[in-house]
Amino acid sequence: MDESSMPSPSVTAPGPPTPPVPLAALLAREELGLRRIAGPADADLLWVHTSEMADPYPYLLGGELLLTAGVLLTDPDRYVARLVEAGAAALGFGVRPVHESVPEALVEACDRHGLPLLEVPPETPFTTIARAVWRLMAEARHRELRRVTRAQQALATAAARPDPVPAVLHQLAAHLDGRALLLTATGEELHTAGRGPSPETAAALVRLAGLVTRDRPGAPASATDTDAAGGTHLSAYALGGGEGLALALATGRREPGDHTVAGIAVVLLSLLTAPHQGADAADRSAALVRLLLGAPPAEVAPLLDGTGAGPKTGDTPRPVVHARREEGTRWTVVHARRTDGTRADPLTAGALGASLGSPLVDAGQEGGAVRVLLPGAVREPGGAVREPQGAVGEPGKAVREPQGAVRETGNAVRETPALAPHPGWTLGASSPTPLSDLAAADLRAARALAHAEATRTPLTVDSPVTGLAALIPPEQAAAHARALLAPLTRPLADTLRCWLSLHGSWDRTAVALAVHRNTVRQRIRRCGELLGMDLDDMDVRAELWFALRRE
Image (cartoon, rainbow, N blue to C red; front, side):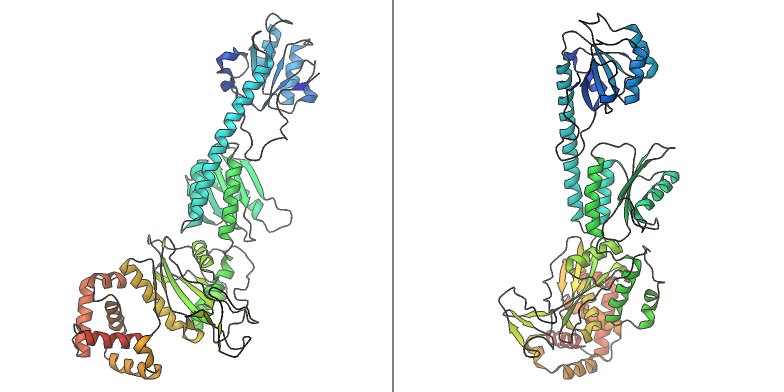
């Protein structure tokens, strides 16, 4: 009669698979008195099984430490051969009362077939061995759960960073002690982390990732392999979102919880890369942003005909604007730059756009700046929402709503969410602007970003003209500004505006304009000469500031 001394493998608690118990760990338990007398020293035990059958092969699943007293042992060589064929990990032979010692023929058979053979002393019950294996397995499982938990916490923290995709890959590579790559369907590397594999291993990893990223029915969600040359374990996982992206891993060893850690990373990366539109759609989105911000059609033509820069993922373009925007809708232009000075890749820029609530992102600006367009209605003081023409109610009338509420109309008016600082980013934003004035708003957002960087503040918002200045008709104010500032070239006017906005600080103006402070001094002195004004006079500064704001 066979009795398993371990629970069925199908009845397990949720979590990573239970790690196997090394045979050396069991032999190290001195209270058991076990002694290896034949076979190799290395073996992994998955569970313990006791059997006194002449051929226990039909009842073995593989990985067992089989315990027997040899009641029906008649042909040791065939007995051991059948155990090896069944995948048994080791054999424990109990001496007395059936056999006074381990039969020599059994020792020779285990050495011949490469099966570890343990001598079990008479004072050690088989149930004690099973209990010891179970305890070792529980301890290993607890260690593995702690490792997976630490990895999960590290991955979640990385996903909240300003550069979430590279940060997640870095943590994944560190916890698995290997190489992590984010690949497109064509095998192009978008991001990598960890030590680099050999060229042969890298090529095998790309081929394996191709199995899960192919656009065909029935493609597997994951695939694994082992590099025959270097013994490196390879894994590939398809990311959700229909972007054709895959996570590829190359590790020197494969622990039981590695698949669970990789699964956590797959979920996070699928969420983080979901805003990514792929090359064609991203180019069209960037073209739309640039056209709205005043770029000539000839400049954006390469993006629209498929010759624009960017990784090619083979994605089907999808529309980025689904609702018709009327003239009354206000738009906010946001310029952003990484605080560490690095250039934002399309995935990171897309994640920023998603956090700001807009798919209209352009990450192709010189200087590493990212531009985001935020469409929506504008909440006025007192909780009024200015709806566009054609909305339910009287045209152009401000509809009073409770604080925080948004009126849902036939044109799906949406309030522009309040901007807030984003860790790892420096932001400059325009005030809400009509569609016809987006080019000017783009310029104001760029100036706001320069001001934020010069003052080391995470967010600067260009404020609209209010107070006394707002009482003068815009046309008259603009005419006065053009006449007053006519002697100045564009670089001089920009320098004067920046210098006045920073309260005459030479150093901060130099930082904002990325020039030497002496250059700032020379330009401001030249402005004073051309205008024939004393720029140290507060009245003069106020008039010039008024003109520059209306320019």
